[in-house]
Image (tube, rainbow, N blue to C red; front, side, top):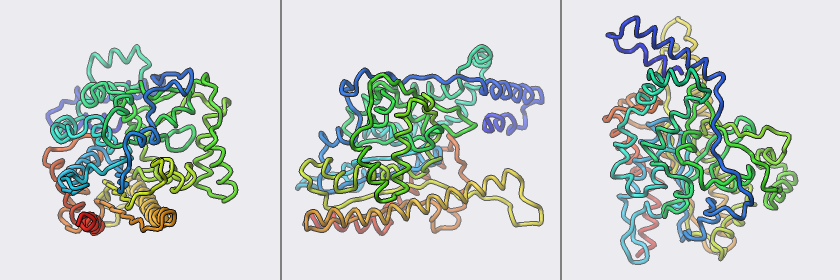
Amino acid sequence: MLDVLHSCFPLKHRSLLFRWLCVSAASLLLLGGCSSIGKVENQPAASLSSIKPRYSASEYDKHHPLGDTLMVLAFSGGGTRAAAMSYGVLEELRDTPLRRNGSNARLLDEVDRISSVSGGSFTSAYYGLFGDRIFEDFRDVFLYKDVQGELTDLVLGFVDLLRRLFSTESRTELAVHYYDKNIFEGKTFADLARSPGPFILINASDLNSRSQFIFIQPQFDFLCSDLSSFKVARAVAASSAVPLVFAPILVKRHDDCHMKKPRWLEAAQIRAEETDDQRLKEAVASLNFYLDEKNPPYATLVDGGITDNLGLRTILRNVGLSGGVARMQERASGSGVPPRRIVIIVVNASVTSITDIGKTKILPSIADTLTVVTDMQLHLYNTETNELLKEELMQWARILASTTGYPVDSYYINIDATNIADKEERVYFNKIPTSFSLKREQADRLISLARRMLRNNPEFKRLLHDLNEQQR
């Protein structure tokens, strides 16, 4: 709503009458939003065994062997800025040659998983659905488009204003319809399951369970619901539904498939109690929440960045619930033979907002204070998440190596835009807003920045050196 109000004022030629009409329209939408009714589109499942195709990592791994390199990408939130940087990393991986089994290949083909939140989910979902087509049209379809402006025009359109006066549908549905028509072409998770590309984990946050919500069939099992018919556009809208700007996306627990607590969750609960693992306890509790019929029947989904702005904690959560990396790898590979190397590439598109705080005796405004407080919390949380996963990655490599007797190498590659060395470029980057609207020059510079940061990353160089040594 703040974006809608802001759009009323920037152009000097706009009359006072236009501004009054614009503010009035925005006020009507705000009041209407208070009584909006969410649209529920997740279908019930008579039985979980009848769901085909089943969108899960275990099902994916049956048809896509991991090989000797397990590579996971994590795309952060940050609007189109995050989408552009994530796209730049995909381009760089595409253009990085690799010799595999005596044939020429690309490092991009080694990617097995992409976990994403908010703005990063547009890139991950598009690549998951359309593969290399992303390099042909994603710039024009999304990165170069003023998506925010087009959505604002839809919200403030005269016909839509009249419709909303007699409707309880939230304005988030306009965004879902726009994404579905103009970006994701009506595709569902059944289409994503049939895609030959990496397994895509789109992350949102559930206001009810107060935890991550991942758009995979095992999560939907707890809702007695079939994910295969669910629109990818709706999942991405949930992943990027910034509170107050967009209303939440609802998914319903249907309670008619006789879902019982799975054995793996029971085992995880026992491990959590025995080891007093607080992170695992929270993960177990968030899933047990959906099994209690006394709890609200709707998951209320908002921006995934609220629970994890890097898309990394999904990895930690899944390993913990699976019983550890060795057990997880055994189920994934079938043979129990782990990969020779584990690679995690994090694309962190967060910024450090520039304000006038501390430059004069004038006390900071409420807006500046809130901006800096949010930045502080986000950056501290991102740092903790990065350090935690880096430590866990090294431990996973040691555990996997102990099961085979040969070393398993780990590579943690952090593409963090807050670490830009060049001062002028850092200032330029930090001035790019977190929105769904970028100028063409901004998008191109972000893509180039991400490519360069990946190419020059010491851990990335070590990975390429080791891969080339293997082929000699």
